[in-house]
Every structure is written in structure tokens, then in C-alpha cells.
Length: 359
Image (tube, rainbow, N blue to C red; front, side, top):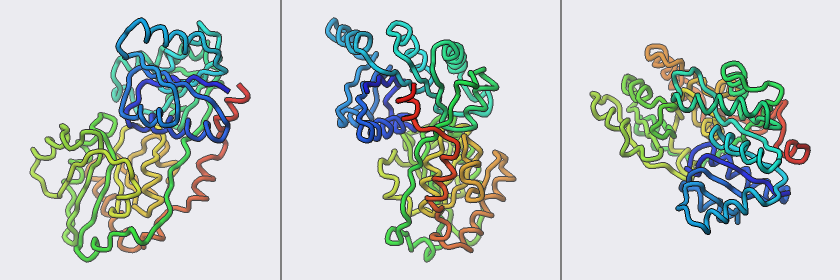
């Protein structure tokens, strides 16, 4: 089976990593051949190339040879299916489908709380995607239940075509040898967040909230890892405050497992997410997750999660409750049961193989 994947970019963000894992699994498990068309490039391009995936980018330098190659491999190759990822790519993929008569499955990779959180252009593209998908798309794949509700109600996406296929959670085994035992001896508590400097991550609120924490017993430290976060505006925002608690800023990491066991808590103040994989990974390591209701975060993690409501006074109480919980429960006991969690996450959901082979 030959599938054309159309994606907005190849930057190291959640949707792009999910696409990479998806291609890797289906290429091996189902012997599917993929070709990738990206509107712009990004750092993950080499990861796709390692899998032997042919890649075409629309922002490549335009030459007669490149243009000929693009037309030949996108419009004249007989693909069995087009699978698109995110609004811009959905629109492009459906336009290609009109000319090639190839069936197309589109994908939405985020949920959102309100229109004010999005750029006007994004809303426009989403409405165009909604309109075209009603006519052209065979199915519209969402990776969270919240996303389906948002897009059906607010952007008029077709409910009958909407299907729920969550990302496969990335859980890790609890490993005592990795534990940072010096935390308790030094009376320090370490908080971790993975978040690029983007409006959706609400980092100024996180910094303001964490800096307002007061605890006589512990020194509190927050480490934020993300793309260019060490040179970001949110770092300058923190430095311009009157810092009470220590917040450190680090570049994005590729191996989350290598640092997770150094931290006691994982905190997220996101306004919207797709599938909250980093929260799930943190919870599987025994890190205590503290998060806003973004995507399916509260639904998936349930009582394993300390729930923030974006109100400083209320959220400070929640974090203090998490600190008490940390004192009374061993890390091993806090680690989520991967089997039960996986079972819960995949109830009433399809697999892409159901769509690919029964399109």
C-alpha cells in the first residue's frame, strides 16, 4: 500500500513527532510505503530520511528539476491514500485529492478552549478545512475527545466523519536506579515542564504561579525545557520579576527518560493540547502531574492528576496539596499502571489500520 503523507512542517513538536512514530510503526508492522510532502521543513527531516521516506518540501528552492520532481511524485504517482496532518496540510491534501481522485483522510491534532487563543488566520484556515472536509475527506481523525467536541460545535466539522484515534501513549517503566535520592537530603523539590515559548503553553502564567509559591520546608526549583526556551521572552519575563523561587531554562531534550527521574513533579499550564503525551510519560515514571484541562489531560489521568484552573490563589493550594501528596506516597506507588491506563486510553477508538485498509 502506498500512502502520501501531507504535513504542515517538520519541526520537533508534538504532532510532528506523532507522525514520525506513526510512519515508523506502520512501515514495519503493515509494510506500508510512505511518501512525505511538507509545506515547510524542520529539524525532524533527517529522522524521516533515516526511515527511507522520500521527502518533498514546498519551500524548497524552485528549479525546473525540483518542480518536475514534485509534480511527478505528487500528482502522477498512483497512491492508494492521502493522509494529512493539521489545518494547512489538510487543505493542501484535499486540493491534491481533487486533481488526483485519490481518497483522503484528514487529521486534527489539537483542542482549544476559545477562539481568543487562536490567530485569526488559524481560525480562517480551520473553517476552510471544515468546509472542504465535508465534501472531500473520507474521514476526519481527532486525537482527543475534547478536540472532536470543540471542532464539531465551534467550527462545524462533520460529526459523522469524525473518528477518535488517540496517539499511542509513551509510558516508561519505573526504575529505582535512576531516582535522585539527593532531593530529600537537601530538602529540595524539583518541578519539570516541557514547553516551547508559545501562546498555547501559557508560560508567563506558569512562571508567575511558581514564583508565588511559598514553602518553609523546601527549596523549590522549576526547570523548563523547550525550543529556544533558554533565549526566550518568558525567560526575560522571569528575570524582570522579583524572583523568589528558582526557575531555570534549558534547550529541548531528545531523551525525556534520561531526566524524568530527577524530578518530583511535572507541571503544565497549557491552554490547549492535542494528546498530552508528556504528562502521561511523566506520570508513568512516578512524577506527580499538575496540569490544566488541555485536550484530554483530566479525562485520561483522572485522580492521578492535580488539576489547575488558571487562578493563582486556587492553583497555589493545588500545588501545596501535590507537595503533601509527595511526602505521603512513595514514587513507586505513584507510578501509573501502564496496562490499565492503555486499556482506558483506547476504549471505543479505532486504529489507523481500520481506516487505511477499509477506506
